Length: 412
Image 1 (spheres, helix red, strand yellow):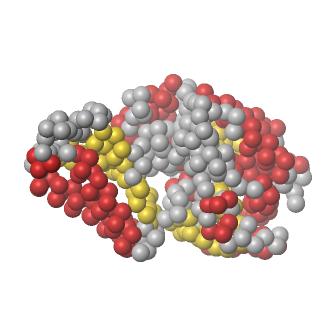
Image 2 (spheres, one colour):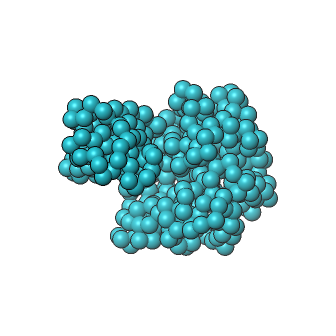
Image 3 (cartoon, rainbow, N blue to C red):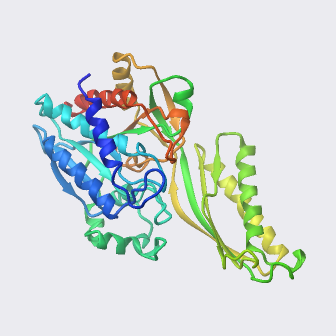
């Protein structure tokens, strides 16, 4: 193989050292000093590979190998540089480091492609900081919500715009730097599967056919605080009970649909947060995903019906639902899938075509250009946890498929 596993491993293990806080697993949050260290490392390695490096208004690092015809739209590959709290060392980073390794392979072979190749490291895909995922890619594609950069705030009360400014970026320039249809020829992303399918089926690579749609919400329920012991159960405006019923309704509906729809509540905040006080305010998240957007709507109707029932049973309750992210299901480009499949077969790698249950930056770029994804196995299907692991042999195989496919695409 042309690509080098030892270089990929060095990149991944080096970036893993850059941590935004002490704790279990990987904690590298966008726009923190640790994120800057990781971005600077990637930029320096891009330069060593002969790439021209720039950083855009949202903080993405782009390294470009100029082609013989630089006016042609580039083929782009990469992934996200941030992590979830207490996550793993491979999520996102595997895609950046394999794209970087592809650039090195071009450089080592002295190949100057016909059209440019661009390697990219994208910020703020995960979303825990501001309660909205895929921010970096959505900002680059002009898909932000109205006033999102000023309205969405982190746990410290800072807006996205304020955090970007502190990082040295000018958020007012984001709109002028958005990409449009035709600006990029294609986008390819290698990513760990984050699920158990490849591992359990003893396969070494996945070619993604489609990515599920998802909606992400924050629900706020307001009620009345009172003494936990002296207030009868029939005389309460208990926001936690209303939340529990709504979450159960959503989860039960997703399960009943039987079409692979999933429902998750990962954030719950109560006020005033004392064990002997009935909470007068509860805020919780809803993450619902499916290949069928109608199924997501069915789940949310069940959630709203439950909240309405709680409200009717107790006039002291009120609620509000705020949508933070909407991404429709997307199909990957068939011709790119075929190219990946041909290279995989030539390398005799056991593989399958499959759907992605996780959201990725690729689904945002998909609206503007042909896209494709390569999956490599996640041991025991674990991801977003410190135990996340993918064998470097599988990552290198994925890098080789990526590189050979990029050679073909940049020659066109």
